[in-house]
Image 1: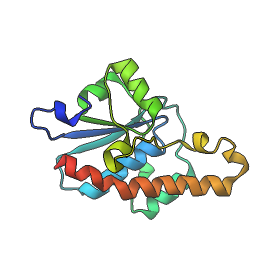
Image 2: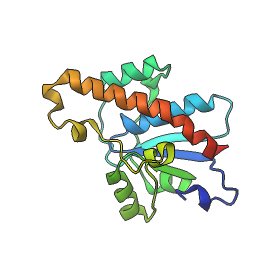
Image 3: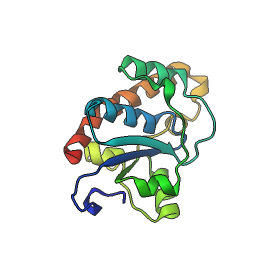
Image 4: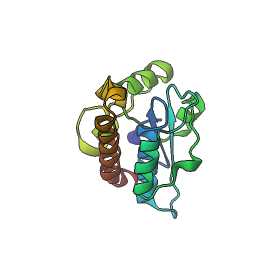
Length: 164
């Protein structure tokens, strides 16, 4: 489905966030929205990656999510599949490449996280996109990762008005 307006009731029952590896941006959005919805919710919130290769979540991501009160230790990366696309009522891409992939592979146009939450047509860049030489400047890289997590965490509540 991918779009709120495609639902007969206009209210999504499931939300799927999509990024590249499913270990940074989409998982942060998943945990941020779950935190806002609380445990007494009928919504299913999940995430997946368009290229989810077996890799661990970086310690910076784990630490920042824990600071937010989330426990990502049980997170398991998921590769985006047709089944996940079909099961989701509302699909949100973190970057333009994710939008393009979903359009090309599954024929669906999906919004960016920032379009939905902030009204900005801007992707949330992955670390290597924002700072290509991030490994040579770990302080700057960590600051970027933390700022992305903080931004997603702060702006995710904007989705609630679309869900309720």
